[in-house]
Amino acid sequence: MMSIESGKRVSGFKESVTLKLNAQAVGLAKEGHEVFNLTAGQLPFKPDQDLVDKILRECNFLSSFQYAPVPGNNDLREKILKKFYTDNENIKTDLGCIISNGAKQSISNILCALLDPGDEVIIFTPYWVSYRPLIELFGGIVKEVESDFFDGFQPELEGLKKLISSKTKAVIVNSPSNPSGVIYSDEWMDEFSKIMKSNPQTVIISDEIYRDLNYYDPRPRYFYHYLPELVERTLIVNGISKSMASTGLRIGWVIGPKNFVGTLSKLQGQLTSGANSLVQSALNEYDFDRVEDYLEPVKKHLRENLKILRDKFKNNGLSHKWYQSRGAFYFILDFNKLPIHQKLSNGDNDTSDYGAEICEYILKEKGVACVPGGDFGLRNCARISLVSNQSEFSEAVDRLVEVITSETRVN
Ligand SMILES: Cc1ncc(COP(=O)(O)O)c(C=O)c1O
Image (tube, rainbow, N blue to C red):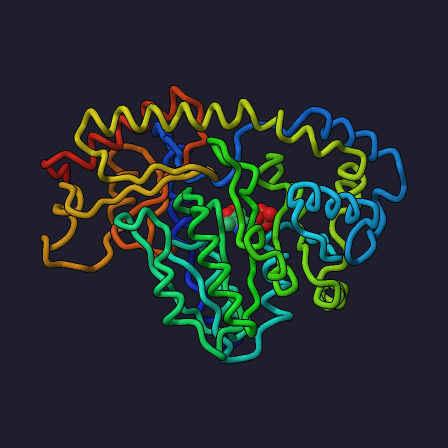
């Protein structure tokens, strides 16, 4: 059969290892195997019933089924901005807002509108899987500032100072971070703001999709809390996917300088048109202050799973193999030097990345699915999601501990 060749821009796209592992997990479950899926990037709960009711009510109106304004429902954009100014009292700049089909589209729009071929974009490892392919899709060049277990996943800002130059079009900051679950410290944000002040050519993209998902007080702080004038070249991304347990409703937004929000709107008008009318109307009626109450039991659940993990890892001498997460849904597990790594690699001097092989092995042997760190820029690690219900999570951690510490190879 004839096949269709893709264009150069996407021919380098790799199959996502995450999706591959997910497919294997689903396949095993279908064959009747017991599978513990620790790959989830979404809450296994329904959203606040009040939001569900508002969506049902809005189904009665014709306008809910018709095109929304390209940049989004005007009242909803105002409401999102009002909440932003309430949450960030030090910001007085008059900003704009555009609503898109999820934060992923918001980020894609930004990169498409911002980048010329050869522009550099700095990201911090470990990073969200989509940053790299999206930057490259729009002709950008990825530059990485690394961080690891030893610096508690707070990226070394000396590294940023060395990399940032007149070629740096943008820096992406994601705190709380997917995949590490780390919240960058106040000192980090303060220092970062100073570096950005002395690099006025660079736009900052602040991906705050997990902003409300801090497990402990205080809430995360951002660089523009230290230097408010930075909002004049900052694009803040957020949405309802994570904090309102609504990944499938596809609503995200960008808050930023009005002229650039206008450019994003022109782009969105040609690419996709306005986002889902029905959900936007329902959100316009919904009281955003309810989110905090909705998230209280969710955060308790995540803290309890963290405790299970902390206790079991401690009891098995594995405390140094993960780093305490403080937000989002995840933590990173380090396979380096564990028996499972020794079994699947060629020993201590082998520095290749065996994350994918190790995760496949864990899935086959113990039915536990986790995401290898390669796509996040981390070698011999995995991202593990904390969202499953407690008994499932507890059993999954037991199995994980057994397989990563076992000296015997099953096959
Ligand atoms: C860091 C980060 N940014 C953006 C997104 C995209 O969110 P959305 O589902 O709203 O497109 C995700 C989703 O996993 C994410 O983890």
